[in-house]
Length: 226
Image (cartoon, rainbow, N blue to C red):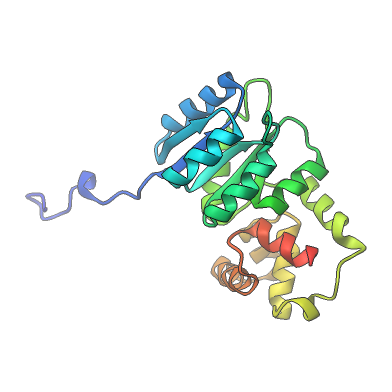
């Protein structure tokens, strides 16, 4: 529909669908805070919230969220086990782990299970990092700081095979993946390699396609872990 001036009304321009998010957190206060924060932020929609891994495993496949915020230390079924089982049913869903401690071993196990990153929780939850982390995950990024990225690389350092023998990546794609593993953003990688950001996005698309993964973390783990 046009206005009298012949221009499309701003309110009539199609808006992107909100990001569908599920929350799995046994602490009711933290869970409610996360739900409230995302519910009251434009561009997000809470489709379910759960206090246990068992409930999440049963309910989340029905609502098919794009992103799941998953507490690692759930009672009975752990968040890691829950992610591993949900990932089999929802391969396109992005899982972000919520944890109190920056335990590299536990976080690494989460990544192997299918998580794309993690957020540290304070007494009142992850705070303002949540919004950016969810947005980042939907864009193929990973909420993963440089400390954990380095620990992942160190974990594999002594058992790492020749990348040429394992993966059909070009020399430049391997170079991009090395920089991704260090936690650099697309723009930072573009600056390092003196190319434009669209070139980096194209390389990442090719990397994900060749490794048959859907995120930075999965690509790094698969590349360094095989």
